[in-house]
Length: 495
Ligand code: NDP
Image (tube, rainbow, N blue to C red; front, side):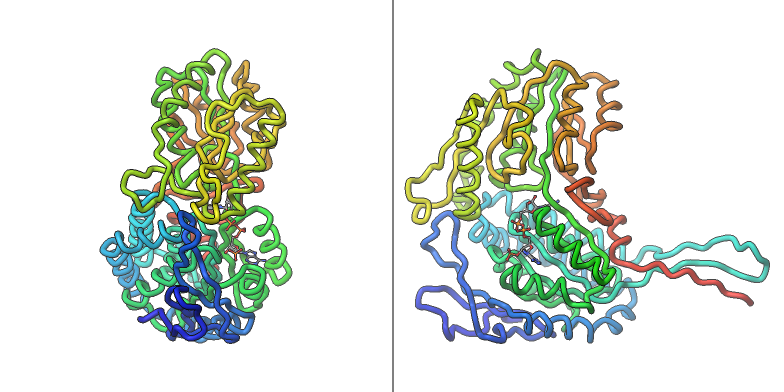
C-alpha cells in the first residue's frame, strides 16, 4: 500500500518520490526518470517527485490489466460493488487529507476540494449499486420454443485519461463504472496532478481492488498517454480534457475501432431575460463562473443578457465578484485559489489583453495579482467584461480562467443565435420567469445539459456530457455510463 518507492535520485528538498502502481506493486519508471510538481500558490515549493513513465511502463501496465481481466469479470457483480462501497467509505473518511493534497497540487480552495472528494464518494457509491442491478433484458420471441435475452459484458482493459482541474472526481467517475461492470483499468492522470492519483490508488488498494485490476502510470501525455491510446489491447478510452487532444484520441481509437468516451471543452452560456430575481441569477452565475478559478469545463463563461436587464445584472454580478477572496487555497478564508500553472496564467493574460485592446468594457479585474508569479503564485483577479461583441474570442473560446464576458442582446432569438454560435455544446443556463422561454431554450439550446434558474452544477447520478465539440460517446455519471463500459451480447436459446 506504500506509494513512496524510494528517495533515490530525488534532489534534496524535492519531496518524497512516488512510483507507478502496476500489477499491485509500486515501482519507479523503467528508465528511473522522475519529475517534480509544484504548489501553484507557492511555486518554489516542490511537493514531490513522480514517475516519468515510458512506453515500456505503459505496456507493463496494460500487461497487468490484461492478465487481471477474466478473474475480475468473473467476480460476482455484488462483490465488485462491495469494493466500490468500501472505496466510497474511504473517500469520505479520508476527505480532509485528500482535499489538502488537491489544494496543494491544483490550487483550488480547500472547501471546494473537500466538496470534490465528497462528490467522488457519492459517485462511487452510486456505481457500487449499479454492480448489482440488471445488465440485460428479455425479449418475446418470434418463434415458439426459443427465448431471447441480452447480457452486458465488460470490454476488457479500458484507459482512464484525466485532466488536472478535478484530479479526484474525474478519475473516480471513470474508474468506478469500469470496475462496476467488470473491466480493468490503466489510469494516466494529468501530469500536473499525479499526487491525488497516487493517493486515490492507495484507497483503491485498501478497498480491496485485486492486483492488476487498476494500474497507475504517471507522466506526460505525449509519451505515456500516447502509448496508452496506441495500445491495441486497450478496448475503450475514457478521456476528459481539451477538444484538441480529445480529437486526436478519437482518431487513434478509430484506427482500431476502439470505443471512446470523450468529455471535452465548453463555452457555457447563461442567458438572462425577463428574470424576476436578478440577484439570485447573479449569485448563481458568479459561483458557476469563478469556482476553481474558472477552470471547469462546465464553468459559465459568457453571460447573454437582454438590454433591458443588462445594467442591473452587471451591477449585481460585480457585487458578488467583489466578495470573492483570492488567496492560497489552504487558508480557510479563501474562496478562489491561484490558477494551476504559469502557462494557464499567461493564456488568461492573453485573452484579457485582447479584450481590452478590442475595446470591451473592463468592469473588474484584468490583471495578475502577483508581480513575480513564479515566486508568489499564479493568482489572477476575477475579471468581468461588458459589451463584448459576439465575434470576440472572449465570447467564443474556452478561456479556462476567471474571466466572465457579458454580451447584450435585443431579443430572445438573438440570444439563442449566440448560445448556439460556438463550436461547443456542454452546458447552458437560462434565468427567466417566463415559461415559454424555458421550453424554447430547452428545445433549441445545443447543449448536453440544460439548467433553468441555476448555474451549471451536476448531480452524482444524472447523466453528464456534451454535444458538438464538447463530447463524444456515452454520457458519464449514472446509468448511461454502461453504454461505454459494456458490450451487449444477444442470446437465443432453443429448448
Ligand atoms: P489536455 O487535453 O491537455 O489533457 C488531458 C489529459 O490528456 C492529460 O492527462 C494529458 O496529459 C493527456 N494527454 C495530452 N496529450 C495526450 C496524447 N497525445 N495522448 C493521450 N493523452 C494525452 O487537457 P487539460 O489537462 O489541459 O484540461 C483542460 C481541458 O479539459 C479543458 O479544455 C476542459 O474543458 C477539459 N475538461 C472537460 C471536462 C468535461 O467533462 N467535458 C471536465 C474537465 C475538463 P498531460 O497532463 O501530461 O498533458
